[in-house]
Length: 138
Ligand code: DQA
Image (cartoon, rainbow, N blue to C red):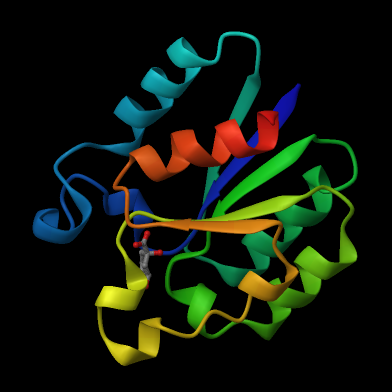
């Protein structure tokens, strides 16, 4: 089974960025824990701050991988283009957020991508990614 994890803008700063909201751990530590926990899953990781690069990765993996775990960061709330890319591909996408976006500012309460994703996981810290992988594994 092949699963692509995609992190969007500012998530390269995990561990450094707003630790009160996003925690102290880098995403490298999260990937190590995921690979240890799911030795039977081929987990690929991609991060970009650039909307078009995220779309390219969705196109590249969205017809052959078994699942995509997407934390689109702030693009979640703004990107019609990422919405359209998810709609265009056949691989199921699980929307993930580290924080509970519904308990934060109102502009984070709207997601332009939830409706085209298989499901949404938000608010469980880095564990949100594990829950998304579990959901794809079924
Ligand atoms: C986030 C929530 C978004 O609102 C924010 O812009 C992020 C991270 C999360 O993982 O909690 O960059 O997607």
